[in-house]
Amino acid sequence: MGLFFFAGDHETVENRLTNLVDARDVANALLLAYENSEASGRYLCSSTPIRVWDVMNIVKTSCPTHSCPKSFVEVEDSITYNTDKLQKLGWSFRPIDETIRDSVECYRDLGILN
Image (cartoon, rainbow, N blue to C red):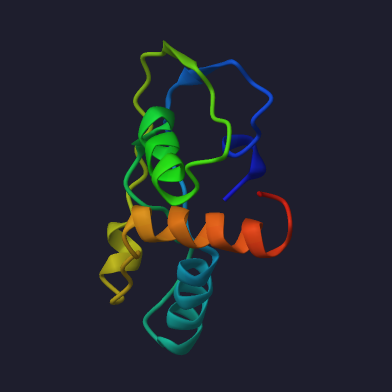
């Protein structure tokens, strides 16, 4: 998950849909496709889209002392990626709140967040 969402130097950000994917889920997808003889072509690997506002609410819960954007500008968009092909191989993504919480913990351990 990119640092943009954690950067506390933005007062206002766009509340757009974003697609996040956990690196662990990407690794699982790669192994699944590699080990499955029926796999061929390209596969999209993504979670369900989530609004930046919702990401920041999860960040605030995980790291209440971190400064988050104070206001959000609504942006209409519709980003969807179809991961059915990958899911038919047996892939699934972990809950997005788990990904975000684990990212916060990782950034805290690295000294990026206080």
